[in-house]
Image 1 (cartoon, rainbow, N blue to C red):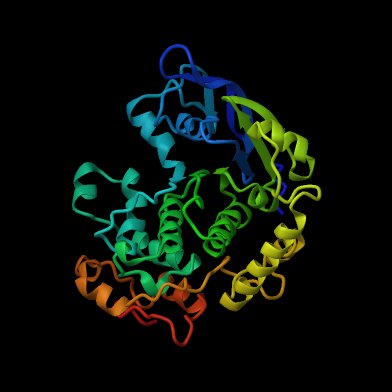
Image 2 (cartoon, rainbow, N blue to C red):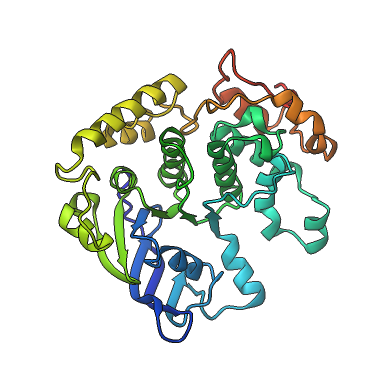
Length: 363
């Protein structure tokens, strides 16, 4: 795993948020995130995890404390300066926040709206370079064949991958992910976590991820942060998190979480099952952190373009879904000889019996 050793990108000092003047959703949180670091936040519902993320990009204004991002005090900036900060802070949402009547590629291109004037944004005036990059990123998250499919026709895991692609097309320094796998099955959850981890390892994007799944936090994180009652009660490496600390974070006896013996058998079985399904779909295997390190250095069996998942088990009729043709009509098809074509060539081919997109331009 990438043990990020870069300079501090995000710094929270004494961060507090009160909604009614009395009860505090956050209470004096101090936290640092380094460039390219993957940090998971765990805690029970109501612990303040979502509030913390929304204070970082000022979707919520903190009551006290400071948020310093890439040298800027986010709590003090306004107007254009705040928008400039938000361009560099992408966000992935639990419920996707996609435009369901729009295609996958149209949703991805919305990640460029922060760089556009009001008029250009209203009329969807994107450059050819932006379109090529959007297609390339869709390929990197395994959705090349779904570019022209309306997102209301996609499975949950595919929708979340569109959300990740939309975030990455912003060219962010930091990606916030608020419960990105809470609504997904275990197989899709692993695929999404692999893509977030890949963004940190290969693109150098720092990731701050809220999770309820402690086993995934242990596997994918450089650091784990625990919140309880709005206070930071744990900040350390995954191997420092034990059953006693988990019980403190969640305020109960947490059995079956797969830490230090408790539930380890079930956890191991789950990993084995996920490994089987990952191998069947051409994904990076979850077995060992060393495998992921080998992948970053070009180890065998790992796609050079990042973790790519085959289509989910949901049977999708891409041809019917793509009959809308709105993306093609808007001129979103990349040039056949451009970088997107090269990315498409590098992307893994879909399964022989899987859906194909009639709108995808052949290289």
